[in-house]
Image (cartoon, rainbow over all chains, first blue to last red; front, side, top):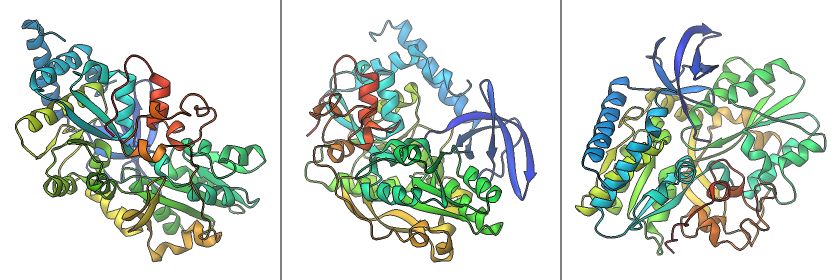
Length: 83
Length: 368
């Protein structure tokens, strides 16, 4: 139920008083309401839950976390850590 | 897919497991609160990568699982009416009520439909003005704002044939109950990343202070969960009861303010019954009086429906992390995904379903 999937906003438009986006998830696209992420723009990644974007993914934070994780993986491998 | 694949990198997951093994000098019981996290753990066998000292206990974060039997019975009563089109998230359809489930209602000719989004129910109500369209509004804080939006839209556009059967629950009150229960052995918590995307994590700072327990807001991919465990073990080993956010790419401390605002305008906090656990004060949401005209319980007069939980199902203990699904004599025998006795065997987030689906290797020890 609390499953939420990251996708990229391809288009956004006003429809009947709501801001709605076309969001791409891998090979498929779905519609998502942008009601809760008014700051999100085309090109941004958002986390979509039951047809609503519930947060905008912070690309900078994501990059930082991932680089940290990745460097740790690399270091562990160099040290020949038992895993 | 971006923001998914990189967090499934086996090399990273294994190096985090190695780090945890280096950090842990004694055994620790950690609870992942959300059922989505439980599924990641079972699906990728993360519990098998962890050192034996780290015991993962599964939490109550499965909204389908905690929806009480009597609410399922109310849903069945409403969905059985010939003037009603009943719309629900798919998982709820196979949850057993006292005598049958929503799929049986559908098979018997009831108009029961699965929706992906609550807005589909609003759209259908607009397209079928002659039908009463009822949406089964369940979920934790992640789902409450989208469901609130459905009622909000119904009112804004003047729909008079749309209503919701509401059974929303909140995470913090259930955690407080778990942590105060006499048999509690949980020493660290992985907070649910998507609930916190909406609510932020300041509520968890209060729980951390109250119970002197470290809490890490965790994501849902294998590397997210292993990093969250690693952060928790580091805190426990150095005696630091504090809150940390692992899921920084989606969660900030104050959460999603527009979502919280809409949720507050439509819903108010109320007591809720949790399946197998019973009434927890201020643990749920119901419609505010201004939205009473959209309350299916009132419209279809089902407020009086009550039901007793089946006795053999140990889901209450499973949901509190006190028993493993495999401790249940019915598990995999009388209770299977096709013939579930309790909701945790039905839901995509239920611990029993996760164990059944991904069962292999050693099963982690129960804490109680």
